[in-house]
Image (spheres, rainbow, N blue to C red):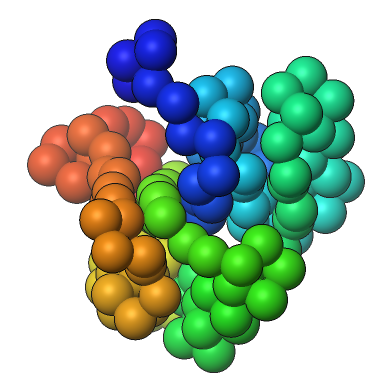
Length: 157
């Protein structure tokens, strides 16, 4: 991101942003003035810490919203709640992803289903909601990982 990019007045949703790369992305957007939505699935405490950091260090509006991106209804609620609380959506960064570690011989169908739901289907359904809710000129960024083209050990898939 360019050092002089001013995002004041813009609202960004970053999925999977309570920790790791997603948290770093959300804080970088906040450092450029964007109000941010910290999406989390299970770690409210981690999400609230990122919200506090965005508010205290960058002076932006920041909220956390629990949503399982593998659930279409949760994704819709994520976008609806963002619009209700922050008024608009200008940037969507779909960052959520999971892996399954272990021996390929031990993988169960429901484990593959969950990985596909988060890593593939969720990207589509986040894009679908972004299409409905993004302001004119808004940006949608879908993030993947090297695991999309090359599996590292000990990941089963």
